[in-house]
Length: 372
Ligand SMILES: Nc1nc2c(ncn2[C@@H]2O[C@H](COP(=O)(O)OP(=O)(O)OP(=O)(O)O)[C@@H](O)[C@H]2O)c(=O)[nH]1
Ligand SMILES: [Mg+2]
Image (cartoon, rainbow, N blue to C red; front, side):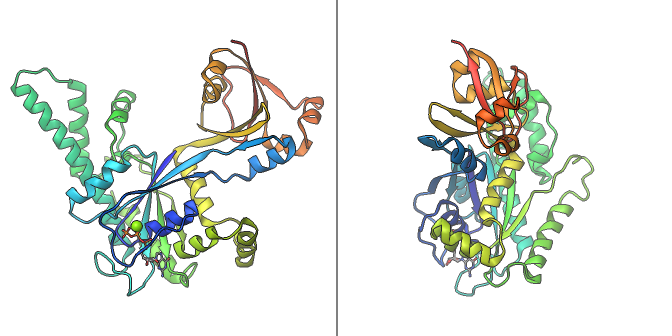
């Protein structure tokens, strides 16, 4: 899974990237305008796999991974500059949209002052303008081809016109309904405003859970609630999840050893770092769930989309297992933990034998039986 961190410059993207990837890259009080994108691959924190491994004691424990990408900020009205970011994030699965909530006179704000509603709107619109430019270019190319007598792909043209109409009304493509055929075509087109997104309000150290942070959160929520107020054709609109955190504190926590981090969090009465929460929220908006396998001295976590059947899930592990699938031996995470080990679970009859069409549930622990 690839997640792109985007936002206006100096909103705290690199600070949050550092926290997510436990790195210590330079953050500056001036906007970054050039250089290479930051990339980091991290394990998906999941206490369930730790507990499963503590029981099986395998030689190897393999976590699911997630790639984060952080680059320069988006600039209002500068498509040429923004295209650099768009090209980089086109293949991302989800977007983390960072909004500045911290006040600091030393850190330049690209538009003026701290105003979460205005900033969030600028960014949402820049993504839409990016898509609109892409659609127009593609339509131009089709028109040129037509002039030269070239036959074009009629369904694609129709789809592009439908997208253009929505984008011109400043509607994100994720909020428009498309049929299955259109969705299939769209998956090749790599739009930006179709990507599921999480909004992260980056609050100041002293502002967390204060009225000030709540005020900024409210303004963001109002923006999203009112976004399509006079557009009844937008029917199934889901508000994006909103997380409030302090990038600077999260970055400090991420630099601590796991033991110290736990003490620090306990001290603050926080159950888990906001950034772990961010991953769970991303799983949620993407409809992702995890299942676990134990085989060949390895306990491993796998990511699938909710609704995936056992045979398709087996294909994640290996195409041979999907092809030669016989049965899946399944136990839920809770049943497994309450039994304490797999032998007791088996003796108590808690290992279910499921067929190809069984819908894998979040937390299932699976042993695939196959024959090739
Ligand atoms: N006070 C305070 N400062 C922060 C916070 N988060 C980031 N900063 C500071 O804001 C400045 C910009 O942070 P970055 O993380 O570099 O922001 P960015 O969005 O990556 O900026 P560009 O890459 O230039 O677009 C740095 O000086 C950070 O230390 C925060 O939560 N509180
Ligand atoms: Mg940066």
